[in-house]
Image (cartoon, one colour):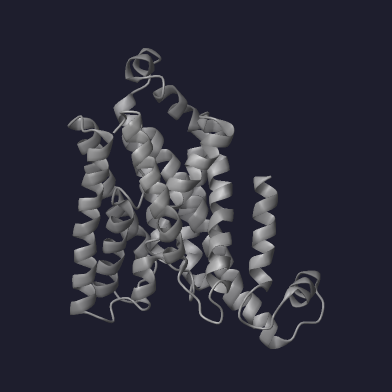
Length: 320
């Protein structure tokens, strides 16, 4: 079901848009038929990078969200809510301001920014014994700090990042294949590693005492898996901007359908996350045609109410 949805929305994303390029041109291109130069250029240079960006960002952010929720044992956590996206975004703008033109540095900077934020959240969550809601509030505070830093950079140096307005809300228009080269390597690597170590999350879910008795160094694994989530989220932010709520919505839907076995949850989260972002980006293109809104705005409209629902649900169960 998830795989079929992924294929369907991915194909649709190639031939649905503001231009006249449609399904016949797409089918002709993939079958080696005759395609006009303009249609070929649109499909290969505009829609292909955009679809790949949506697939990569969706898979990375959904997987990162599933990892963070499992590691912190916090259903309210996801990369944008606990500040990881904002930390990565601040690092990207900082590098763009001081090292313009070095695009290969941006994913590395995004990872470092995301990792620093993840470490801070880790110590707040586990080192101080904070409640789930306190962790979320701390993440919101960190997001505000990093947001102020990003706005300061853009005020002082407006040319620090081309398309900064899209970056700040999260969007995929204007993404080039060159923007995806290094992030795609990090994301594919992170997805594979996360899938292989999913069973470690299942062991951790049994409780620290049980995990220790099974020979697991819980603290080291928590930090390693948070670092992996930071790698995935940071790589996605480096080209998709501050795209939010994917890592919150998708893992919850997957767990509702298949349960809590992370060996199933993680790969399905990545698959559905990819399909979800492609679908939302497709909606963002056509809902207000001929105008187009950044997909991050649509995500906020969907994710905001979902987040409020989760807060109310957790308060009712006394989990926050």
